[in-house]
Image (cartoon, rainbow, N blue to C red; front, side, top):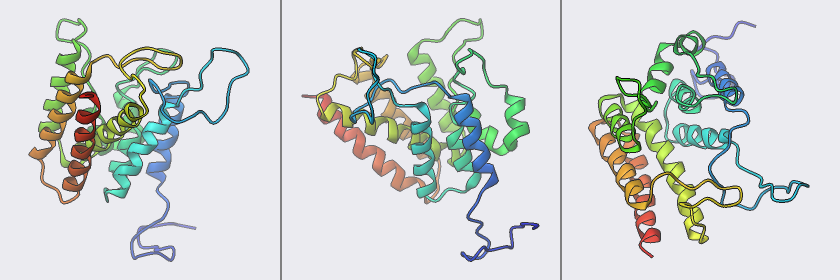
Length: 233
């Protein structure tokens, strides 16, 4: 059967309940980030390893899915949702130590999606090939969001919202997210620098006007206020 945009599949006109683009993005993200985990968790694990002193860690794919879900719930279209799933694919190496090739990403999902992902990718090396400091990387990222598109700003807000929310959930339970512990890698920046970064990203998104952005900004601001409260204790 030939499926085109005019086929409604019993839902609102022009809306196809299945997106091959999003499905591809999910597969690419799941394959690339296989074996990668979040720095920590706040919920109890769903199971325990038989070996002692081995912690069950949260797969990175859980974060990517949460970010894409926020983007979709906010009303952004398929290319933006696809980019949300892929927002770390150019920045993070896979478990083999490889970087994903930009041209390969264009071939897979197109220029539009790749453009959003590029805006969301931190620059790690300076002009001389040396590694940038944490502050330098974050300042470069903030500038990219400021000069980018409303779509990239929306994904960035979703990313920071989920990150900050999980940080707050941990802090609320008395978990020290800034120190290493069993199954947890402490954050590389303390509360003051984290607060600066998340606040700066929020402000950078104000350069863009889109009716889908204000509710996302409001929710991130709420989490920022929670973070201030938790870290002031």
